[in-house]
Length: 141
Image (tube, rainbow, N blue to C red; front, side, top):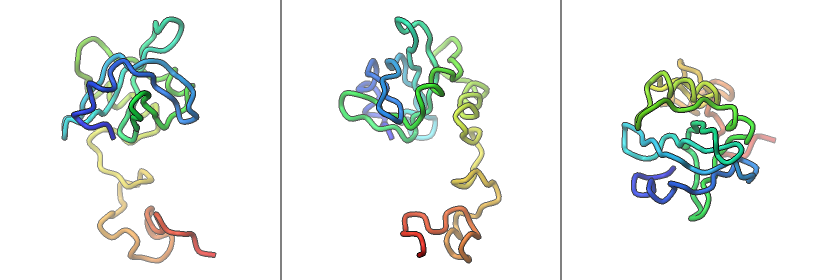
């Protein structure tokens, strides 16, 4: 997660995909409405950075030099672009989230996208009863 205090640090840095390949440079950072941490970045891609796409960075890491995201370069290059202005509309946010296989903004779902999953009860039922059973543990032999 890129905190509110790191937002200016990632402006203009190189974005690297899940395999470490350079994708482009951060053009603009869009903070989340909840806590001000970075939610999306606009990334200049293509020849001479002539095309900018939006990338969700909720799980991104910054190593002091590069921003590392968990998506493939091809998915980033094919992602939707931001419209005019310094904010993103709900429609733009949801188009980007859909492109990257994430649930729409404003919908609470389980880790596997199951809107009926009760995360308060995760791991309390038999194996396979919820999407989080066994998370962080060694699988049974």
